[in-house]
Length: 218
View 1 (cartoon, one colour):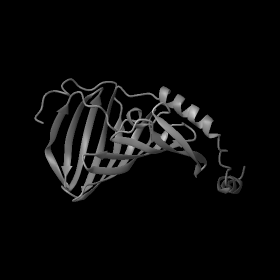
View 2: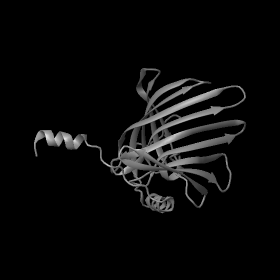
View 3: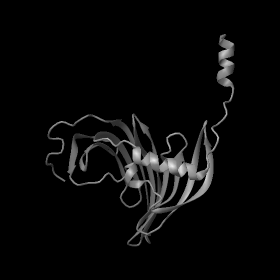
C-alpha cells in the first residue's frame, strides 16, 4: 500500500459502534463491576484546589494497602514541603474507589437516558435514584461501551445543613480502573466551597517497604 493510500485510510472516518439495548448494558455493567480487579497495594499523586472558606492548593503522594494509608504533603501553595509532611491512617476506606462509589441495581433504580458518542466508542447514560435515601447518593452514571465500567459518576450530598453536588471521573491505569478527577461544590447558608482533585502517577507495586505505615504525627 502506498503512503498516500495509508494516509487516506487513516483520514477516512470509521463507523461508531452500534448502541446496545439498555438492559444488556446493565447486565454487562454488573458483571464488569463484579469482575473488576482491585490492587492490593497502590501509590498515586493528587493535587487538590479548594476555593471558599479555607483556600487550599496542595500536592500529595499517597501509598495504600488495604485500609492503611500514608499521605505525604509535597507542595503547599506552590512551595515544596521539605521534608514532606507525613500522616498515617489505619482503618481508612478508599472513599473514591470505584467499588465504593459505583451504583448497583440492588440499591438504585436506573433510568436510561440514552447513548452518547465518545470518539469511536459509545457511552451509556443512566439516571439513578437510591431505593433508600441517605446523605450521599449517585444521581447519574455514564458507562463505557467497551469495558462497561463507569467513566463518570454524578453525586449529591446533604448533611447538617450543607448540601453539595459533584462528579467523579474514572478510567484505566494499567489493568485497573481508577479515579482520575473529582469536582465538587458544597453550600451552606454562609458560603460556597468549590473543590477539584486530580489524580495521577499511579503505581501498583507488589508490596510496599516495611515501615510505610509506621506511626507518625497526625
